[in-house]
Image 1 (tube, rainbow, N blue to C red):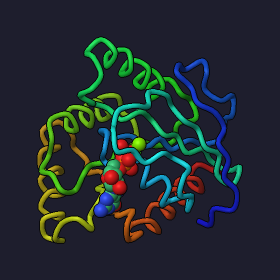
Image 2: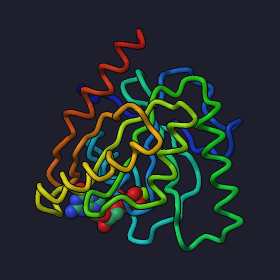
Image 3: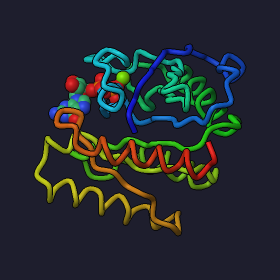
Amino acid sequence: MKIQTISFLQSATSLKDCPKSDLPEFAFIGRSNVGKSSLINCLTNQRGLARVSKSPGRTREINFFSLNDQWTLVDLPGYGFAKVSRKRQENFNEFVSDYLLNRPNLRGVLLLLDSRHPPQNIDLEFVAWLVESQLPFVLVFTKIDKSKARVVEKHRALFLQEMKAFSEGEPVTFLTSSTTGQGRGEIHTFVRRALEAGGA
Ligand SMILES: Nc1nc2c(ncn2[C@@H]2O[C@H](COP(=O)(O)OP(=O)(O)O)[C@@H](O)[C@H]2O)c(=O)[nH]1
Ligand SMILES: [Mg+2]
């Protein structure tokens, strides 16, 4: 998929602030520092589109970007950051789950996982919630340039193994690096096929 035009639509802090657009949406989510902003910039070829952060957990709004006036990339707040009080985390989770459960044009969730680490409980809890909520999702392992290929593969396999406890099917997985651009084409193809399948 060639990205011809890209524009920032708006930020939202509640479902009612979300754009009125009914274009198909793909939402990116993962814990802070997973490499979400970097991946969004890599996929869109825009260095400064999503702010790459050295101090994670600052953004709590949902950001909407229109691509080729064809689909909307949704940048969801990272979950599980330490610097935010429990109360605020609960509010934040409510907003994200409200969006995920009630947005009619949401076509898919891309859940980002840091390929350097074995399965983390917070990620497994979130993916279990996605399964339980019957939301369509794929797994995107990030930062694969940072580890040996066999370590990345081990972490991917372990995650899928852990998922068997609560999920029957096996999700589609992608291995990506925003530094080398690996996996970029595969994610574009995934979005393009999903748009075609949906008749968009
Ligand atoms: N080596 C490497 N570093 C990455 C990659 N993606 C992100 N990073 C680094 O990881 C840190 C967090 O990235 P960021 O995109 O801000 O993560 P976010 O909090 O999930 O949006 C930054 O220092 C990035 O430069 C990657 O694919 N490879
Ligand atoms: Mg970020």
